[in-house]
Amino acid sequence: MIKEKTEKNDWQFVFLSADLAAIRDARTVGIHADAVLLFEKSGKGSTAAWSSLSERTSDYRSARKKKIGFDPGDRKHPEDPEKKRA
Image (cartoon, rainbow, N blue to C red; front, top):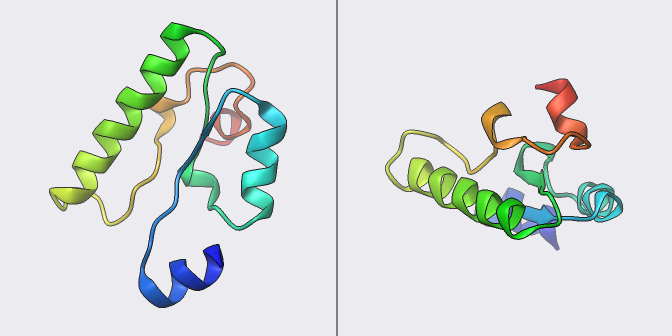
């Protein structure tokens, strides 16, 4: 369903998690790697993740970006697999 909504209806999905295994699961079900963010299991980590999502959503809504996705500055968790690729 994610692939169908993304391709046919131009929906965007993001996935935030404090669990590295869940991040792999999100990618397995079709959520693009750029839209997946691992955050630290703490109040600080949660706050940072929601702040990043808010900023990326604002970028998209104001047409500064063509899609919602996280950038290297959002990837502060040392175990984030996308941090190494960024």
